[in-house]
Image (cartoon, rainbow, N blue to C red):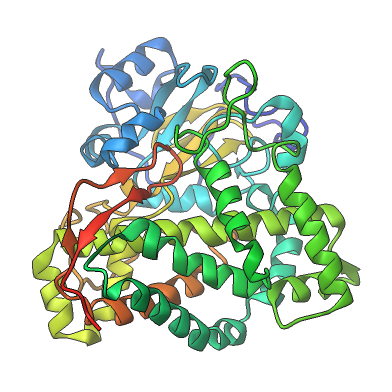
Length: 469
């Protein structure tokens, strides 16, 4: 017998209820896995110390941000998919952040899709969407953010956002994106070398986002500052510390005060002087006769600033780096530009910008034979799902002609990425302007990766190429 599901405000990410009486969710494949002592994992009371030790001893630490400085641990994910696809992992103290209660890592494509599409069991709102727990005093604020909402609240906000992201709106951006992409490539073409991550990867998404939001040119670097502070908080290059040298959590109203102050000022300007941009649309949008509240606008501005900027900032260098590292596939694409649409989908599959999203179980449940207790963290890993051999032939092979390509880079369910088509558009236009103009681009040194367990990004990517006029 399953009790009433947890709801936002009841318990939270630290709730550890009994796993007894768990039920199996319909449509989720289950497999009989065996623990080290020979017992059937479907009947084991998990998690316990034995399973935490067993998982951690044979895998890279999926929680530690330093793991990802060396790249996504694909060998670890491959072992987990084969041997322990829903596995329990510890959360030790790391980089000054306190230890946590542990989490379930979900690594197979079918299970990642199921968790993403079942918010009534796997909630974004209970404990938010990043692996590490928010500070308890910040949780009510964080639960208001679009990424952290569950239906029906999420449904209402999605309807408002849809008004600013219609297919027609995205299509009208194409010429502007082309113009900006060409200008970015023009700027570096004669140099012969550059830091691609900084000089190209950071520039085009910023220019596109600023145009989309109607942010004045002189204010655009503020978007980069806020994004780096929020996304890069685990990385020494961007992290902030308090007077006691302890890391500052950017997921709080206090830490985001300057961004929200700016958002309010921008909103006042847009109300006084409406423009042809998404901010103006959102400020005047109505759903069920209601307009966006002040708090909702703050959180939408946060969503655009961070999700709209950083994911493409990560995807563009990641995609070009992958093409450089696979010269046969780059040559194939250069010889046949008609492959560009499938190449873009393969880039998105092979190097997804987002490493994980976290959900919290609303009730006792079961996934892949593992008993999950209400309140426990369930973390889906997109790089692993995108290399599941049950879905993709030769999943570790980068193939610009791959068809079909059912990757989960944009998530699934109610939180499927609103900007997916805009992301594809930016990648397509940038590659059209870059690849055939600078076809011999190569690495000129080692890449430097962001220290983060949330976003997979190249901070620095030195390249050289034959200068072009």
